[in-house]
Each structure stands twice: as C-alpha cells, then as structure tokens.
Image 1: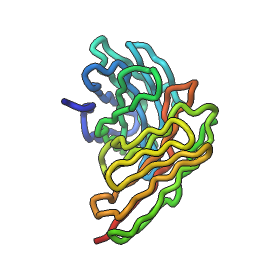
Image 2: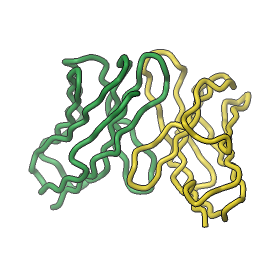
Image 3: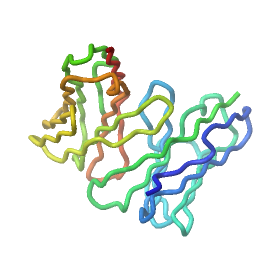
Image 4: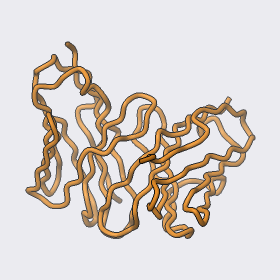
Length: 114
Length: 110
C-alpha cells in the first residue's frame, strides 16, 4: 500500500516568493495535518483538516494557508517567504479524528529560502 | 500549554550497550503518548502509542513505558541500525494535534 506521498521533495525559493506543497494521504484516511520541522527541532503543528474542513491551526502567521480537496489530498501554501521558513514540511494522515489513532507521516518537502 | 521535554539530547552507545531515553510531559488531559523514529532527511516513523500510566509496549529491541509524568524508551542490546532520532509526542483530549519534544539523537557504534 502506498504511504503518505508529498511533492516536491526538495525546492529552493527566494525571499518574498510563494510556494505550494502537496500531499496525498493513505487511501481511506480522511484527515490530513501539516507540520514544520526546523533543523534540530521537533515537528511543530501548522494545520489539521478533516473532511475538507479546517479543524485546527497552530501558531503560524496568516502567510500560511492550506486546503483539503474532495479526494482528501491537501495543499499547503506559504506566501511572502522569509529565510526562517526554511524547514522540512511534513504531511501526516490519519483515518479520522476519533481516539488517538496513529498519524502516519510522509517523507516531507525540504524548503530552502535564500 | 502542553509541553514535552526529552533527554538526553544526544546519546552514543556501543553495540550491545543497553540504555533508556526519557520523555517528560505536561498535558491538560492525555489522549495518547507517541514515540516515533526519524532517520536523517526522512519523515517520522511510528513506533508506539501509550494511553495510560502503567502501560508498556515492546517491539524488537525497544520497550516503551508510561507513568503520569514521563515515558521511557528502553533500548536493549542496540545495533548500529538503531541509530536515529527518537521523537516523543503527546496528544491531549481536547485538541487533535501532536506536541513533539526536540528528540534524542542516538548513535550506536559497532
């Protein structure tokens, strides 16, 4: 079975540009979450979506936005990029929001902002 | 605010030398405590979920335990392939996000 797939795997942008990252969840999983992992730190929660609705937002500026599509895939958009946005962006999917069911992570998209 | 603190930051072991990693947490109401393994440049890989104090889970050379304030990941007779960063995270009963610690970088030398 395919796991969580993310694209692109690596990308380089310059300050002020915009970026879109994509995520396809495991088949049958209806919830997708996004996390930012700065080098040497643990992942930090950005967004959670379930059934195409936002169900949670972390402490990130409005430059960060996301959406979930009818097929449960998701996009994360970051506008007006700053050097500090350089990080590994992780997508995680889970079956639903009940209990403490497991979040399965993708390999991430490595963003470098110059 | 939920918090997770992991120690040590880094740990170097010889192959076969057993040890433990610590995860201290504060959470408003624990829905679950998660352990993940992360290899360089990759996403976290799920290891265990613990739900209540006293619970223990095992997988190969790894054993996770949980108390009301901390969790331990015991590594018995580690091998070089166990080298990775081990992340601990909590999920509370209200909000659905995971709150991660900064991880323990484990290096096992042959």
